[in-house]
Image 1 (cartoon, rainbow, N blue to C red):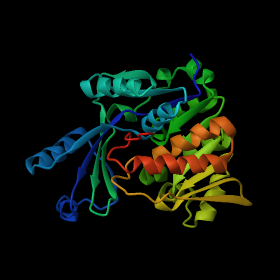
Image 2: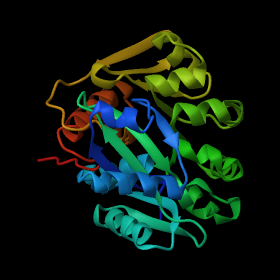
Image 3: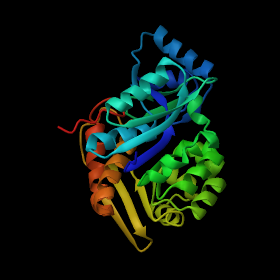
Image 4: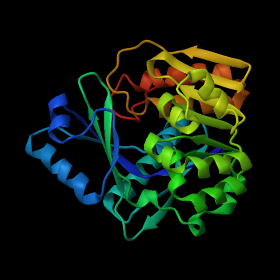
Length: 315
């Protein structure tokens, strides 16, 4: 079976909780940070939240899976390949994706549990992440289905796959076209030379980044310089700027700024994923980056009105 877009990414649960600044300080967590922890550490943190009577909201997450779920809601024919533990969390994750209209392909890890991401939302609506990647952090090249990749119009790759370098090479090599979504500054800084080497050999059709990821990838602070340097590795560069909108470009001489849509904000978790889905859904139809950025902003604005990365409602 062929798909418009085939996604490769993390199987991970979003655990969302509202906390005050004192809670972060108590646990020596810096606001806005993105910390990777082991299974024991995240379970201990969840236990501490439970003891305080804090409500933890649980939703399926993972950047690439969020993009695929939103694309399916928009009407695109999509599939998702993810690796998870042989546990209730993993099986439920894939079941829910299917209910959203995504065709799921599971790679089962018998040794590691399914991933969890704890999103701590402070009063300013900003997010601080504590992440247990679990099974999703380890893709083996032999687990990658070449034929499935070759049949897809576009393969969308979640940035965390850079930790599975050999598997990532295999995906790039076999895909007709790829789009790549950079993830986590700390991961980018560790893997930048290898990732840029891959993209020089197999340039993505579209390279997505937020301002922090783009800065880590290009080692620049200036928005114009960031997007120009991104174009050294991709046909199209998309730089999201939070509430300010997005900067998109095909050439270094012509950048398009698409302003964000003002709306009431409940939770910015998944805003970038929603933008990405809107952009790709439009791009598949018309290959117009300005129209694609406009739809991206529209879908992002609808998502942040509700709690959860897959809260998109179109009506």
